[in-house]
Image 1: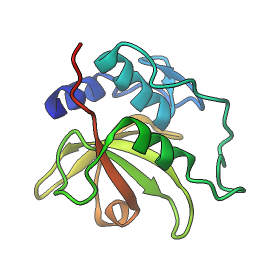
Image 2 (image 1 turned 60 degrees about the vertical axis):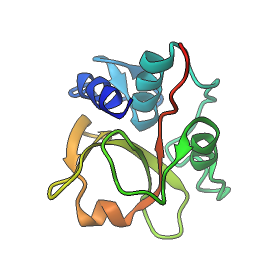
Image 3 (image 1 turned 45 degrees about the vertical axis):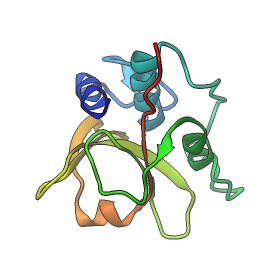
Image 4 (image 1 turned 180 degrees about the vertical axis):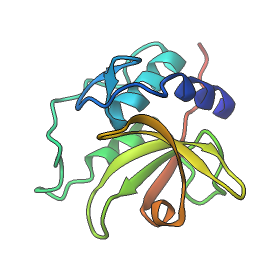
Length: 145
């Protein structure tokens, strides 16, 4: 499954950034990227996604993204980093987790795929500063199709 989700994620590379969007080759944000991968793996959305602002969950301090990830993925935060894992990030210490991506490569030069404002869907180094921001890691769950 992990190799499959990395392959799917790479087909989204170059998709422009668009807040709340989830259309491959047209526009997506970080959540939209994962929603698109999910749809290709499972055939439908994981759940209805309400409208959200760029600062979503911050004013209330609610871990909406983390809670949703726990509902739909298998938590692997206590296992070694592996390609195909979904990574949730806290963009600053003490903030709610509100950015996510997919680990695409491990080893000496780990990388991840994410949709980043101003850049679109890119494959970036999972550098030490990014690794320090990881709040949790998850994997897609094998299901009967």
